[in-house]
Amino acid sequence: MQVDDDVKRAAGITDRQYISQFPFEACLVMKHHLAETIQKAHGSPDWLHPTYNLESHLSPLIGDYYVRKRDGLNNLWILKPWNMARTIDTTVTDNLSAIIRLMETGPKICQKYIEHPALFQGKKFDIRYVVLVRSVKPLELFLADVFWVRLANNQYTLDKHSLFEYETHFTVMNYRGRMNHKNTPEFVKEFEQEHQVKWLDIHERVRNMIRSVFEAAATVHPEMHSPMSRAMYGVDVILDSSFQPKLLEVTYCPDCTRACKYDMQAIVGGGELVKGIDFYNYVFGCLFLDETTHVCPL
Image (cartoon, rainbow, N blue to C red; front, side, top):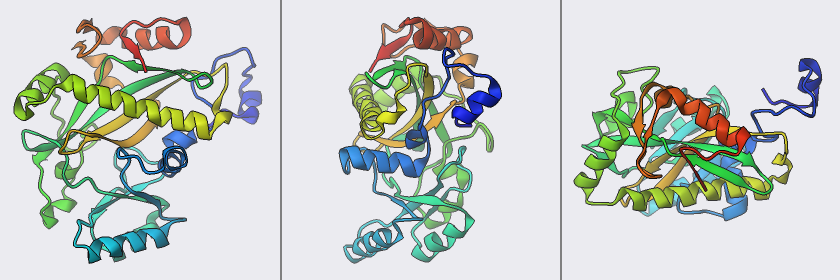
């Protein structure tokens, strides 16, 4: 629910009370607005794959599709509803007719599929980061030291039959499939060994990307500014085969069950143990008490 003037009156919220969302945050958390916001601010950055709003940009998508087909390029696309979570009604396809027909099930974006992601032991994964926004003007952002990896269950393949296999191409297993929890420090250590990379280098690229996302929102939508707003967002990131971060989505009120359930060794910020039972205390302390325990400024 967007807390506007009508909601404030109905709920008895005064101008002296803090609200855990920013006005017009749809420019971040609704997928078509997110892409539009980034494109207005940054054009076509490397970290955002080509994205089309099917309600307004079907013709350019069709043009792009046929240019790629003519040039013999990969033409795999992923369709995502504007405002759904948990990969509901999400489809991977290379069939243009299917893309057009799927518009009938509700408004969607169509985004170029990342066909060559970085893999962990042969499986696809993505990473959930938690971003705390204390202010939009000036922009005050903090990244929680705790982040976690989400693994697909099956070995990754681009075999056409696999495109319908949820546990091959998707990573959110909290609500369907079987969930294989991987402790973040173990994942980072094994990933570095498998690919001979330094995670801190990847982490720095992710930090820069996330900062750019919120700078885009603050620039394109200055109306987000509200001195009585504070918010927490989940930012989902995938790495391509060159270990460059790609933005997947930004979510409001992110599910932080894993952050609360498990004590985690921080990969950054000194490597201290972050106790799950205190996770929301650190969040609250950062947003409302100007504390920076287990968070890093962006």
